Length: 487
Image (cartoon, rainbow, N blue to C red; front, side):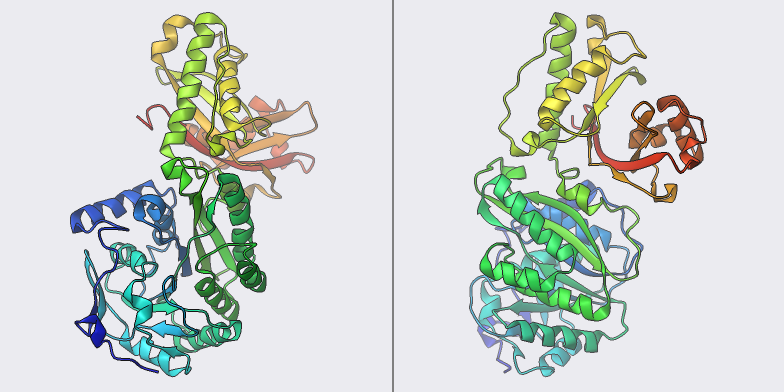
């Protein structure tokens, strides 16, 4: 059911709908903004052939930092065609609308449509067609395009907006994609979706956790059913379902959840938030080199905002000063839901670049802000390797905080990534030692030396105890930041 594009003025080029609203209309500022998102995204571009990127589509001030993770992860891949799939927020229709000629304009220029691919897709089913109303006001598709322009060179796009198709039609769509793409490795699916809408922070995080787990585990039918029942929320669950059905057909079973946040992390409003995630899907059987583990992301290890980090450092600094000067522990009141979550943390004190104290809790049993407060006191006064910090030292100390993920047991030291993982070794309750991830970076030890020093220095075990089957080895990740990092 092909329809003329004459209603759009220039029949070839789609003009932007939300330039100047969801993202900056000035090309230099827009380019600089996206560069900033990429710089802040703490992930290494993957060597794997990523086939699907799931990214949010809110205003860039809220979700741009999350979207950057997926695009940065895929940035080393050489794509020729990028299929951009979005939900319809404004128009109800039963089919799948495909723009099959010309290009799309943003402040960064025009991206050409892959007309050959689009026309093959339209020809594959009578319910794949061009529905002009689907594109007239839609933002979900458009906001992904500047990221594509900044990430990839010389690509063409296939813009798709989905209405309310049946599950069977999505299976037919996935089959058509599989047939047209064939063995090509230069095609990427970018799927545009946000998560839950306008719940309080705690409710949103719990709902989003379940939704993300369904995506991660490729529980497609559960996702489809629960999004319709609103026990899960994902405004783009229709295109996400289509993409995951394609993944199932192609045998793409590796799913990495790269980042999660919600609008409250930016606005500070925790009463009505919108959730965002960045996810990649691929199928070579190997995880990325540097992804934050999915469990760790959803436990909050990678979603502290700059403002939250500043708050924690401020708590640690004021606590140490009050305790060293007056021997008192300060009371703080905290309303930020993120800082009320129970997480482990270490506080490290340096003076003139030398270690001056370091103590922490690996497993959180208090709200994070109170854990940081208590560990700040302990690092300043209870580290047995050093005398208590004195008042005349306060101007010379530098405070570093490490917020920890939950440890997990590993079977082999090959799973340890030096500089990324902290490590715990233990034999019973009396022999336990821990090194934070930054120890490997600071010492530049080999893995063998790292493990040997951990056993001997910290756990008071033989140097080679890490090779003993009786030794329990656990790893964790840490979000590490210091006063100088956030100034």
